[in-house]
Length: 392
Length: 137
Picture 1 (cartoon, rainbow over the protein chains, first blue to last red):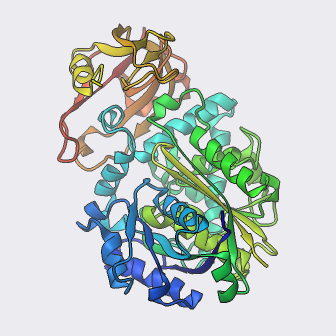
Picture 2 (tube, chains in turn cyan, orange):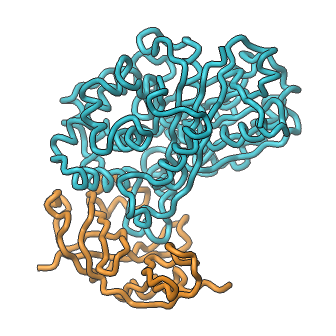
Picture 3 (cartoon, rainbow over the protein chains, first blue to last red):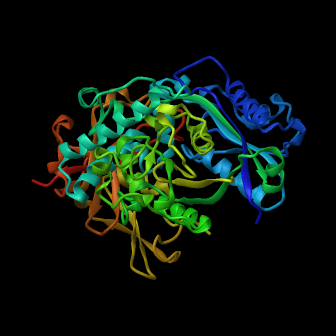
């Protein structure tokens, strides 16, 4: 298997409802990635694109083919990936595998979504499609609802009084919004206080407004290349050194592990094993904090903190820049935003920029050499992790 | 190979407050909702059984923001129940004001009755019943 590097990255601003089409959003991100890599359209051999709800948000299926043509990537194979909120990550993972295998040398991967364009009622309905439509949705279970269930279960299993857990959760949002404020690409660019979070509207118990990520529009794109190609293009290749992916069924069938997410633990284990790295080696991690509790659960499954302790670690600053592990210096899903098909590719964009030392100084993790991404799709149905390292 | 207990059969029974599942004849595992193979041993040698509908609440959430088409239903409470027979099942909580559901409800015994039916929308390929759990007095 060959080494594979990220040699170009691009990302739109993540935002609320806006008027650019999915093809336009992805094309903007992709042209930035292509230009940064100094490659030409004719060098790109295939497109791997995460897009979840284009059919619903703008009546567009097969967006990958239209995006390829729009970008001048004439007639290349173009595949669309749907793994709910992990779609961008599984597109990148597949792109990695095809380059690593030697079948392709240069590919474009990424994702795009217009989740905000749908508006809250339709977005809530369509996101609920990533639970079991027959055996979960009749109850009215929404996506915030899934994490409402997991939050109460987490409090009960770990014996943490709910007010204490709520304080920990609120702080994860305060930290995320703080970093989002200095990220030019972030959906929300404002601070929130503990009081703001704890007095906001209750979306579903016990999750309040800032415990939940927004529905966002946005796109992200990456050029992946073989080591041989990468060395000719850049002095700062970012290598993908570990990948992991796993799946799960309906939430209730995961009962042996909940609130731990078994598929995540398997994907994480694959990533660490392949890269030869351990949790303590990771300098910066972009993890899937679609809800405050999702961040806490993810940080534990990733091995950064013991089970039942991540919330406290956040309060102590151990999950922030300068702490034990810098988590979501981009602002994460709650502040940077969550254009679901693009989110995972956006995480890779952030890690590549962090390792290259190219983000805003207020949120730069100084000297970061090894980064990791973590993306959760559906009710823990699709989990994907990537480990990235400086190649210089 | 033919599916042993389809959604349609499961759903028809659930509408009549009967909870059907599968028992694996290889390892004894109980499977709800139904699947092609046993979740523990992958055997297809399973028989249809009726479950008690009794269990204990493991977790809950009260939902205030509805999906499109279900605005009239909020607020409502979704629960996950550990059934007497072992599996967990997602359903609703009936007979309690959603505004008054707190952590105290976790661990409480419940029984399924007066099940609800989501009539379906343009995406759902028809209706779907939901187990409606009530606290045992």
